[in-house]
Length: 68
Image 1: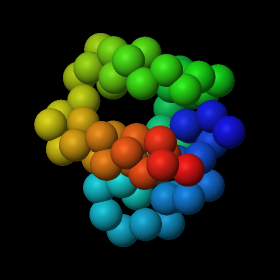
Image 2: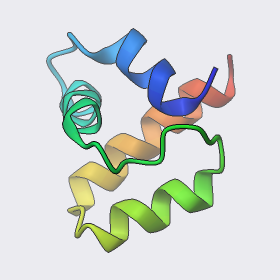
Image 3: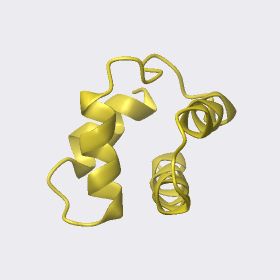
Image 4: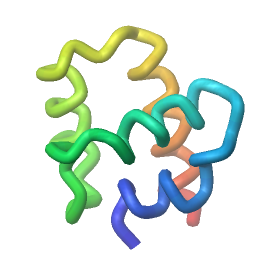
């Protein structure tokens, strides 16, 4: 399963920063959807001007994703 699909499936209803990220990713039609390349996703988030909180949420989500 790709990261985007996993994030939406597992965190869309969470009321925390990871849930916020999941909802933002779901609405972002340009978010890299068919990849598990962490660096590519980080570069995309930085290019979009993601704040520190967003990047921290991404790190938490990625750590959980990588353990699956």
